[in-house]
Length: 404
Image (cartoon, rainbow, N blue to C red; front, side):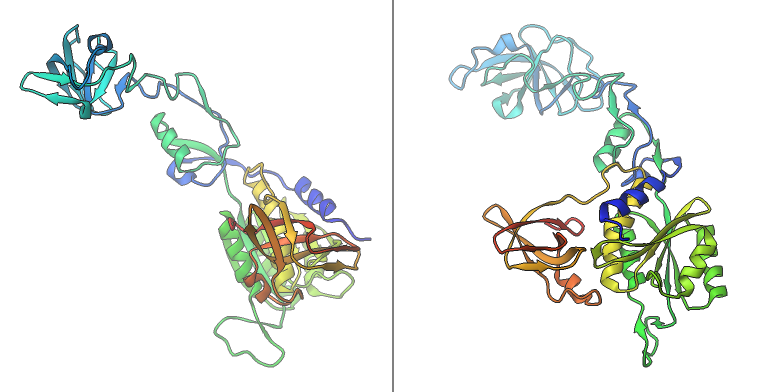
């Protein structure tokens, strides 16, 4: 019996749990998920201040000001940013003020410097001013006691700037998981080595490591391990001792004798699945020492696709994220595609926008060993099992990464 894609993903997501939280410097929290509510202990801005370089004054004094009939006011003080005013503005007076400087008492608006002409001890105002014009009020952005950020929010540069504005230097965040990656198989040859007959380059490990880095996770690269039970078990146990999750590549085909299956079964409660999808039918998943193990297929396209659809969402959940899947959208198919299997096809596609609609065409040969088609593609399209989709009809699509 084959699992559906949704069944397999649900089982995986139900099995993984969030990582512990840890307090860290706000800059180091970039890209992680906030694990606490953040409340304001002070107003932002902390005082009424000027939004412009200009003159702080009483709006009623200049209501009739114009280019032809400027209003002249006495200048009683200059207030640079970072200094508190010493004098109160009264009728007929103004204070020269810089952007961000504290508003003097008595003044209720600011006229920008471009609408004035400065004299020795006075200033001509050529524009009328509305009350509160060009004034930023205390607490206008955030008031003391406000809930500024909720737990679960992804921390971006703007959140870090806000935390600093609130005088917060450290926050609790969910720790991103450390993920160990192992390539398995006697047929694999490391980069730089001679490629002997019957051997292939180890590409999966590099692709998976890159997918992990792209998603913001720390990688523990365990290299290649051959088809030796003792060596593989030692390698995988070492990986579990260092990491929060483990990914293996190769050796999980259901029904085949394989040392990877033997070793994985020794490590913990591991299930070997056939998932009704193409590519990526054979998969393994389980828990050992409380840590998830993902067994990916050996074919490079299958391996990278299974990571995208199953492993990435699980690791994001561990890291505290709530949005786990890539956004999907409809794309108009440019050619007929027939799927005469009982498995949903995730096809590599070139997706482009024309006249406000996304259009998709197949990116080369779709064999599970044709890695180059992934290089050509910028996304996946979904063709349901036992179905033909004709040109002009729409299919579900998603981009890789932030492509658009």
